[in-house]
Image (tube, rainbow, N blue to C red; front, side, top):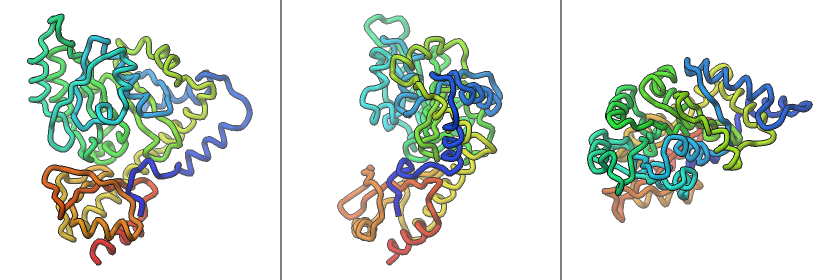
Length: 344
């Protein structure tokens, strides 16, 4: 009963098979291989748009490189106060960009509030040399609380950001889960509604160590190749990353894996609701945050369930919020055992 993170899951068999296949023979190094060349065309097909693709091995690198491409050292990146770039990347966006400031804002469900973005823009007027200059807006899809931005919500935020010429970045560590939830083409959630650059995640959803920076706006990112090299993410054996991503995208594997994870969370949520658990955020992707009696939390831990405490407003000594995350490997049996212990 491991619900600690989707990072704890292994790699999908299809991806392991692709690694074995690409391991045969020799290939050109530093991204000059055939798998990397095919990958760009595959992403262009999926997103219905010409793209530049930069495979990397961590989500932190994908986010930090993306933001460095669109925010100057004197600039600022508006993001949600719970976002990974703000809380969990050890200053990497600031370091990679040469000092760009992160300006965190609020919003329900981990979604950035358009009114909050406007307030930040009003507080940092253009051209005032004493202030950082807002340069980018970063959105997490799906959010750190398991919510999913709709097409309309992204478009509305893009509209506010464009009033000051901000570029839009999307942290898509769980992008597949959002696409599977909304069942819309990836293009509808990205460049068609104003996203300039995407951190495309695969590691949480079945890859071994594979992410990619996807550039939709060809007016930016001309120096990303140099930034990636300087950051240590131009791998000499790039084919082993590209092969993972290629297999991930083949025949919709990425969406099937994400849909399974989403379904497991939905089943878990249904059982939790039946047991009377309060859930501050309705589940849409593969994360859920139930508030449970403290005794139930300890009983679950004693039974071997793994999860993280996730303190939220409204918690008390008697009731605590925890985070439960499902993956492509989560089974119905795990869900059933967890709910059986909860209801005991």
